[in-house]
View 1 (cartoon, one colour):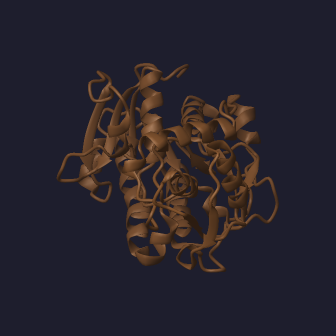
View 2 (cartoon, rainbow, N blue to C red):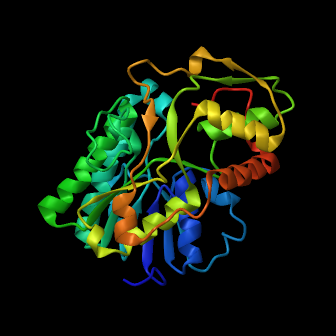
Length: 333
């Protein structure tokens, strides 16, 4: 396929942060999108609700359901060509509280989709992984051959998801690719993530002191729209089948550095205090993740289009306009 125009694409986890940006970009490029939203009795579309003029888009079909049901998955994949699988439980702190649910959804839910994809004979299946499967960096930048060390139940469940996906490529010839985003940020991200946590606390008149956990962890941040474009490029490149690709920019920032940048961009300075509830168990904390994107760039010519500062400005503007949707006074896990 030369481009994504008129290609029938399923996005699972379309109601989530990266998923909503992927749906938006696919529609922009002319794809026909079936968007899976986690079933809820109110019929809400999650973060897709925040995209202007989306509900009337002629190329969008929104389906509510749950990947934990294999029969539903078979119906969901009917007539689809490319599967972008992003549906998952993702919050690391909640994985300490409810680990079984992570393995149920992230591993067995993925198997349900893989089996449905095999029966449907889809053209491509992109399984979305995470840089957390690597654990704390043993060397940097981290390429796809970096040893895997799951330091949380969430990370372990994503290792299981990746192994299941690759087993379907090796056993059945399913055209699987594993995409492994490092940290993402941008508009619509929830306060579960550290950047919106900092921004929403700084912008709130009710908050006098910023509550954070450790300020030392370093992460490689990609603007979500750029990650979406990378996923589409990977899906359109046959040479990516059966392989793993990191998605990141190759530069890391500590939480302390991000806090200082946000203070500068907002022209607001508040004292930071340590909230013990936000500190992860010592052996579970991943201290440094910096991406090597060489394989992705070499094969697809992808390049990030948004600088970290530009992305922060856009994210700050979004949260300022939508501050009422955040709860900066509580710890979101």
